[in-house]
Amino acid sequence: MSGDRFPRTLLVSEIFPPRIGGSGRWFFETYRRLPREAFLIAAGEHPGQEEFDRAAGLAIRRLPLTFPTRFLRPRSLPGYRAAWSGLRRLVRDEGIEVVHCGRAVPEGLLGLALKLRAGVAYAVFAHGEEVNLSNPEARPPRLRRRVYGSRELAALVGLVLSNASYLVANSDSTRRILTARWGLPAERVRRLRPGVDTRLFRPAPADDGVRAQLGWTGRRVLLTVGRLQKRKGHDVMIDALPAIRARVPEALYAIVGDGEERQALERRARELGVAAAVQFLGEPNDDELVRCYQQCDLFALPNRAIGGDIEGFGMVLLEAQACGRPVLAGASGGTAETLRDRETGRVVPCEAPDGLAAAVIEMLSDPLWLAGAGKAARRWAVETFDWEIAAGCAAAIFARTAAADLAAGEDAAGAEGSGR
Image (cartoon, rainbow, N blue to C red; front, side, top):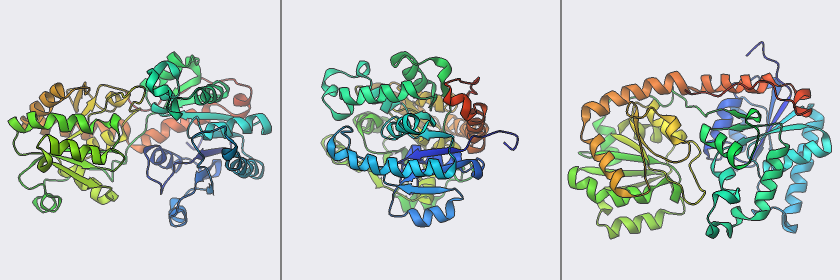
């Protein structure tokens, strides 16, 4: 990266560590590997920010970046005004040439304002679900009544995307949404896939002591990690458990994460008589999470589309593979891009439980395949998605187009992101 020319760049993201979130982790792991003198982070506020920022090795400024979901309402304006004022000072005082916006809204709205009022170019990260949900063509009528499906939001997102110098899509799936549904020129969309820390997430031998602590002794453990929301498919996996346990009686479905669907999932497990085979582990720390990946038998993210709500990529699938675990992903959104089908895992339609149950039974019943797929998964993660590789791809994208070119709307030939 030493020979690259980076414009002085400001990343604006409400979601940034220590706040938990896949996009925040993506930004942190990427930007901390880029030259500190060229990149400044404007991150959302968090109670644990002072300790984190001291150890982060990044130039971070904290701003109030959390706003009401109804964007153009009188009660939203003071928050936007305060954020705009803080960002305007950073742009002026730090000599910022380019702004990277963590999402189309709300960060992209601030980027658009900076372009109009301060003449600073901006780029926008797209994660999949937010640009799909905000496009009216992607939603059934019942979703249009929800706040994220409002005409207001669609208009704002369209305005932000059309005025951005370029877009950074986290997968080919997201790139297709931007070009096909939003009509954006393909040359303005760069694909940059997230990565994984292959030193933190690494294989370990089966450990009876750790498995006992987790309550996994004598069980064949199927693990899902992620926020408990409908698109993740926890409910479909619970619906599949009676069939799975009929063939694999010792199967246990361990769920890491929390969210709005927890009570409904617990109730569904009781109704189906499989509550003893479903374990809710809550929100672990990094060390506990790694042990869960290492000691499970199979990792699954049985995601499916709920209206326009999709899984844009699926970083947890990379973490599991880096730990040497075979994976199962739903055939929706960008999750298929995280694995090599039939080699490191399986891609399975997860709208209904029958096909999902059949795939899980086939995989759990073949220890030799699980072992071979786990080894292939580790190689795949290290060779394709290590954060050093992902950051190198980001550097190529960020450096190829200088600030003057961006301001003029001229895109240089874009580098493609990590992955095959």
